Length: 329
Ligand code: NAI
Image (cartoon, rainbow, N blue to C red; front, side, top):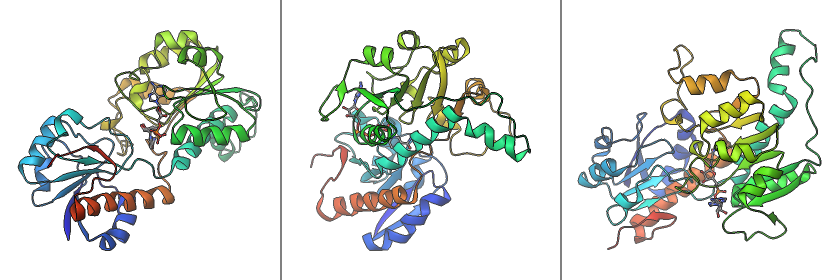
């Protein structure tokens, strides 16, 4: 049995890991705490650490894990912007789940878009109060509108396929413009032509605050912006200014640049201390979900299978499936 320490555990995480762990010969100790330099010590005795999107896999955490004998970090997510690759490389291998259900994320992106455009989030509340008025509910057809997709990888392409079905015109930007049948344009052209912009690129130094005052100025009035990728792709203050000025018609956000303290936790009995997030949530044409685009049964099962397979494969043969950082032997 390989012992693994599992951080930031929620009840839904355990469903498939508990079901499948025996098949892979992995024993799991679950911790509710997030992984960070202080909590890393809790993994003493474990050979692998399983971490998620808002865990801190920075230099200090890596150093503590290495010093207590942890031999690998298995991310149970695709993005790895929370990992200090320079600190991990050569010290401790880090693996991830590069793809588990691009459709889960793409379908959630569609849910955000349709809800915002047809205002079903408000209609639900209104009819529950027996208020059957339609005032303020005028939406628009997506058919014939232009969708601009930033990043035509697995999720971006799944979203494009869905939106083609709606009859939208598609344009896209990507530094690797390899997909067939896509009209690739520069980011600037995409921002100026799209009615709906959807972000599906990773967070890197070159995509940080891709949506900012400059790019917002290039956009059409009443543009809709969707972000199910990573929060820091958007300069939130600039987005709020764009919403206040009417430049942005609606924003569907599954991610937020300061989400790590709040998302996945219940603050319903507290006063939220993040004024920017509070302001966003209070805006009638903004829909915030708590980094849940991945959350389907199909995706959770694949995440568990691939993560456990990554761990087993490494300890069986030293094979590094899906590695983002290596330890040279
Ligand atoms: P992928 O690696 O298949 O595709 C990413 C694409 O973005 C690639 O084609 C790449 O060339 C492109 N790209 C890189 N830099 C770019 C730039 N500057 N401008 C435009 N395109 C650029 O990744 P996948 O699986 O499609 O995931 C995309 C992102 O979705 C991940 O990085 C992750 O942050 C996010 N994600 C969010 C989830 C959620 O629950 N909200 C779940 C899973 C992933």
